[in-house]
Image (cartoon, rainbow, N blue to C red; front, side):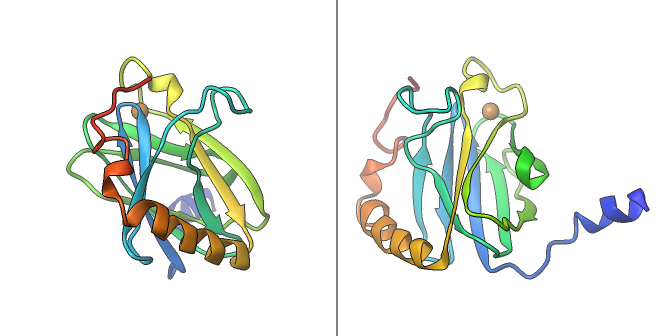
Amino acid sequence: PSFRLLFQQLDVPKADLTVKVTGKQWYWSYAYPDNGKFEFDSLMAQDKQPRLLGVDNEMVVPVNKVIRVQTTGADVIHAFAVPSFGIKIDSIPGRLNETWFKATKTGMYYGQCSELCGKDHAFMPIAVKVVSDQEFAAWLEAAKKKYATNPANTYASAGGQAA
Ligand SMILES: [Cu+2]
């Protein structure tokens, strides 16, 4: 039975939403190709709780929906892992890997990079905020304005240095 489960978890059901997750030294970028293709960076926030897990911009998804996660690496290999969702998948440069989850409760869920990737490997957390459909729609509208209209506000295009 365990082998059947292992096999089935690789079978991605029909997704309600796709988020493309790119691992970078040392932060994550999230793109929403279904929703105007905006993309933003998610950097560890020094002033947020929980320590080492809080970020400036969370990945936001609706509750009770199948979220397809497509992941890749921009520089070296990282790994996208969120224990509460039971997902862990390598983010490999030149390759698009796929996994999925469905959160059944709203709230914050955290994960960390799980492939040793250099100096700040321990400091590139994953923060996923699960919200209601209404909240998600409102967030989408705000996010489109905030991120899509000004690509220069992403961390990489601003030529920033890791903290
Ligand atoms: Cu990493």
